[in-house]
Image 1: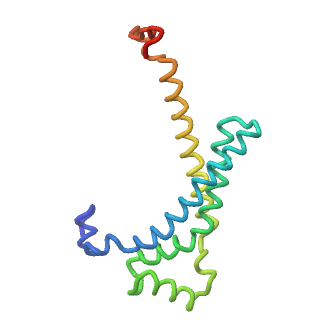
Image 2: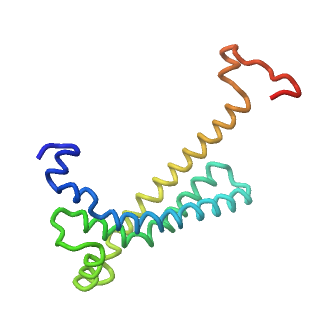
Image 3: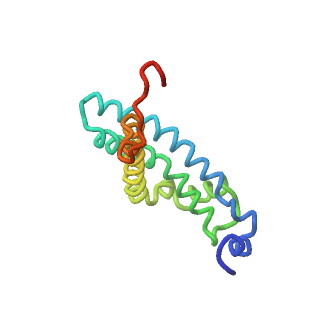
Length: 161
């Protein structure tokens, strides 16, 4: 079939577009519940120890990425199996049963190393970029460098906002 959305619908049907969505939720919700509190906690601890902002966000992102990607790998593997065009019929529960019975518990952790190795640095870089841009925004709002450069900045009158 052709490319794009219409081609995908022709290939797998409309319902097929949503194959594995339950496994995605079962992976992504716990991932986020682990990642963001861990990131915040580790970042605060690194900051308390006097680490530079870059080290705080990058270090926290890496640690949180490892601690959230590893335990959620089983649902990532299940999702991938469900989305395989050659997957046997059955949903999430049937796929989990089949994997366990036919391949054992280790089948749920296939690819854990590459997944952690991709997810942890990616999120560390993403949140470091976010933190950097957030800091830039705070600086820009406080100092108005562009307005000053363009000559459009007016000093605020004391007592007024």
